[in-house]
Amino acid sequence: MSSSTFSKATSLIATCRLASRNSQYVARSSQSLLTRGQSRRWYSESTEAQSTSTSTTANGDSAESAIKACEEKLKAKEEEIADLHSRIKYAQADYVNLQKISAREKEQTTQYAITKFAKELITTVDVLSLALKSVPEGALKASSTSSEPQHLNQLHEGVSMTHRQLLQTLASFGVTPFDPKGEKFDPNMHEALYEAPIPGQEAGTVIDTQKLGYKIKDRILRAAQVGVAREA
Image (cartoon, rainbow, N blue to C red; front, top):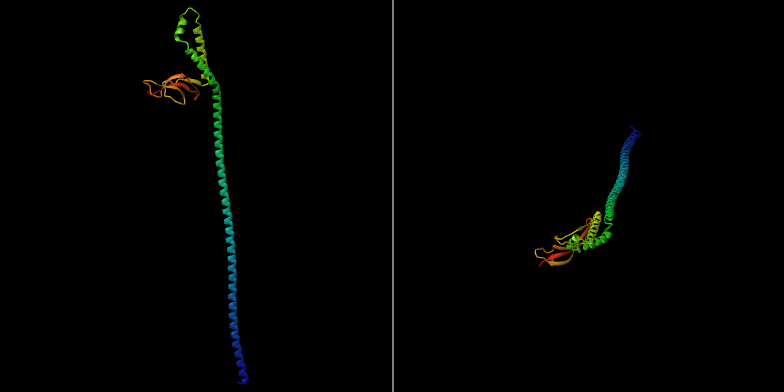
């Protein structure tokens, strides 16, 4: 083998070795680039997914906040409606009570309209009662047996009839007399004119009626004027 041929062979071997090294480097570089590309693509996809997840979470939070706000508004409106219903019920109850009170007052006004007039009229009844009591029973008997005109008996009978007629008229309007003699003294119904010790009578008992009491319906029109027993 000549020296020139040996040199060419040596040069070819070196060239092949260099080409092999270059090929290995290129392969490693390509693998590295591929790995980096995959890493970048994964990172990009991961970032995009994270961004999408964040956006979805944000949208979910926003929707939840909106729902919560709506629920709060709905609750406030329900409470307002309940309050209005309660007020309406109270207003209706007040109106019904007002109607009842007005009807009762109207009825009482009608029933007790003659109160003032009745008080004046029972004074006349008292006068007629005193007139009848002022005539002794013996005088009436003597007048009835006398041959002279019986003016006293006729006058007494006329006054008595007038007295009865007035009492009947008062009764037709719910005005009635009451005599509390023998009852327990009641300051709401009786007016004590005097007290006296009476043997056998319990203290506080009405022993005498000077003037009858009068009622109009269930109210006291005039208290009875009485004498009351006290302890001896």
